[in-house]
Length: 360
Image (cartoon, rainbow, N blue to C red; front, top):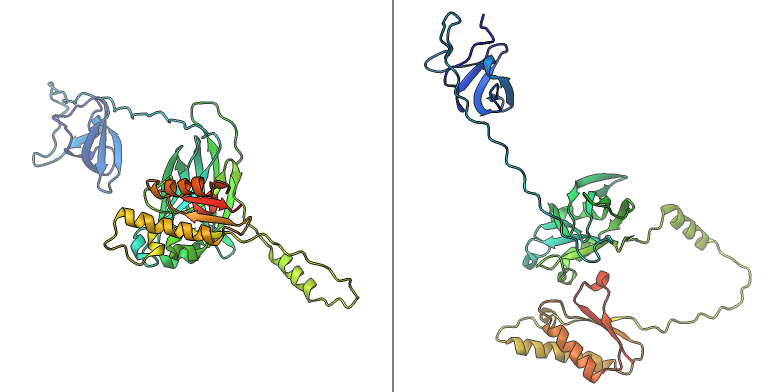
């Protein structure tokens, strides 16, 4: 029997050892201190073991002194080094970031091969809060979790990559999350559970992917929470729909007074996409100045055609880019159509690169 007071000769990292009081052994990977060693076993698990419970094995067989020997050599243990501390960085809070703004973003991997390529999904946290979130999709009568993680303030997080055939699984998605801050006081936010319906056809239309503040590439953006308010969709239950259809089927034979229906005279919004690829099949041989003039000619044509339609709203989609086309459009509106109110078009509908004009 071996005594517990025995010490071992020249044990070092990389040595093969076996256990004295248990079955097994492995390779020495690390010395924790003067008494404890980490051994990687054959199954890959690393096990902490007392040094005195191990013996080194190899070509020289057991490297242990007999209990009858008077002189006992000491094991040379490398000095214990402190584990490097993880670097902490301070979260920089943005102005206005204490109101929650959360978005789902979808990007094609190859926008030139739209409809055939895969897509990437991201969660965008445009706020000063950490979010514990769960992203789900609806399958039959149940929900399936697709990603659940922690996302830091003012960042975007990759969720998943999916194929066009998986779009049917994403017709109905839901994002649940709670918001909080670390190591500082903050305003309490509600827990959110927001259901959204994705329009699969948008994933096949180039103009659905627009310039935005979150990605260098065009993306399809769905707001989840805007300024602390959850996005809402119009939901009609099956029972409500059945009741409405039943009531419509009942024929009322009682005489009724004629009802005058006032027609809505509000004209529909006209959308004009000024992106050059929507105006021309090719731009071969055209300079930047030529392209800009073609875009402005289209703008002038539309304004001329609608100059007498009072109240008509026109949305010019010019994109964000470097702002050259946008500035040129605004300049013409200010000089030639200064009586017409001008404003940024709805972000939800058109992204960040559109201007709405109301004819006066």
